[in-house]
Image (tube, rainbow, N blue to C red; front, top):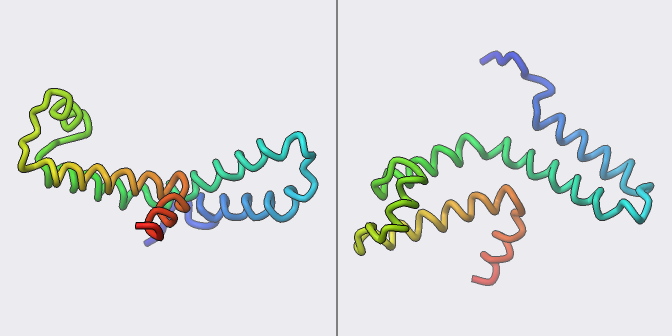
Length: 120
């Protein structure tokens, strides 16, 4: 398959940027900017992880919603707020919400998932 934007793609560009900033710039960042610099590096890493996971995560999320009988997040949220989720469906809803939270954490900070798995 030929893609218009094949190489370097967005992930490769982010990797190169993160590597350059980490290796070449981190050592010379003034102390007063170090915290914000680390925040910026973390933001770039989050963008990279999101680009890698979005298609699969979105499909899995839609599949989980369909499996518990809801078209989208808004429909599920409305049913939860109104107390209209049948009791026998609650364990599947809970499992779906936990899977969604884990997918989000894997993008935001995968260490949270790894730390949780190692203590569970």
